[in-house]
Length: 489
Image 1 (cartoon, helix red, strand yellow):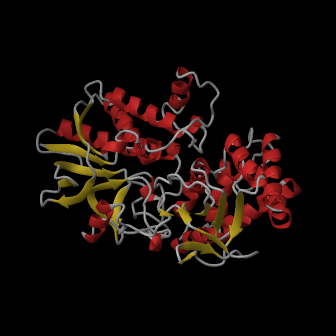
Image 2 (cartoon, rainbow, N blue to C red; image 1 turned 90 degrees about the vertical axis):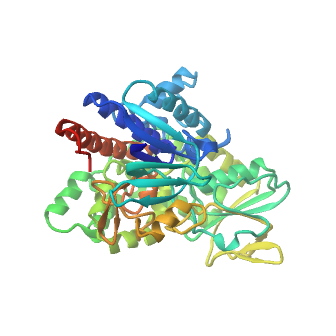
Image 3 (cartoon, one colour; image 1 turned 120 degrees about the horizontal axis):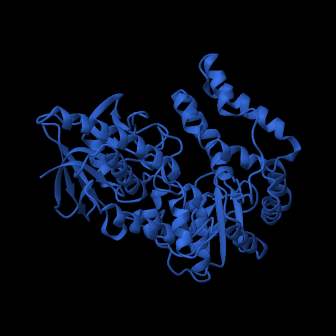
């Protein structure tokens, strides 16, 4: 049997795509879209992030932004209320996993979707002369489809994989396990590093030393955003475009104007001053106090860019995107992905007790005599028997963690984007190799990070899913009216 669509990956992006396809099929009176849904059995219909989480892992995006479709953005909030979690803005990821699984079950009802579950990891994709694809599973399963959508999540690999196989090294997302009394190094300071910190503390770590190239501290979620930008806004950016190519230089001019508007009210410089002068406890205490008072204008500024940052990103030249990645993304991520207050309390308590420290390092960590070590910019080297890699991975499509991407790259069916993940056409979500579209092959979600800036946000992936589903159903409906022999491109 040849399916209409093969969706590879069965996490949040894939469930959003199924929901969008069902909505569009209902509107177009289209029935029985044949879909082969591929996913690892242990995280089928939940995905790796939500399906393998533990109760101490919380979401880092407000529940109001975790809906599956753009037509019903508060579906998750409504589900939480039905579970007795009214007002829970940052619930555990396990709750989101249950919501995804139940939503998937409901999507299977009705005549619009005919889903064949392939509870197996897809490891290869072969194109036929007729333009269809054969998807091959890790244990011998096989299914054909006229088009394929990759919903693979974040591209794994990169990071500190030079330590793979060494005792005490844990790759991103790996189970930390019991580490009673051990000193632990954590590479990174973003959301993944916060997860690693909580895992290490739950495992009995004596000390946790987080480190990164820039040494930015995590920031705390504001109780209620209160600052609205006046300079770095979408209308202003559009005005700059009308005057000519925007570019990073003009965008940064507007951004710096906004920072001048904020002036002494800003929390960034005082926080960094406290970090450098008085230490981590003072910095975290200051940001927590500002968060409770809803006085975090720099954070508010970055959060308000969510709806249009991907449009700005798409208009930048590739060298500007590389410059942003190198110079700004770490700061952007730290201030744009704040930590919920309840988790921030845990960070602060650990810092006060001397169990959490943050370092800016001048070189990559090293390993000798069974110990990992880092050399901070200030202070002595730190040695530990355990290193947790929370760097977030890299643009490595040849990593062992994603055999399908490695196979597609070898076959010349996907290309690495210079800023991460694989290259796609931002308008059609179609995969590109050396600028040429690959017929019938599409991708959405974090795997497209380099082309679509906001892919770590579920609301954005739901929007992309709706966009693609609308296009596909329109094509399919036209082909159906055209009669036998016609099909969607």
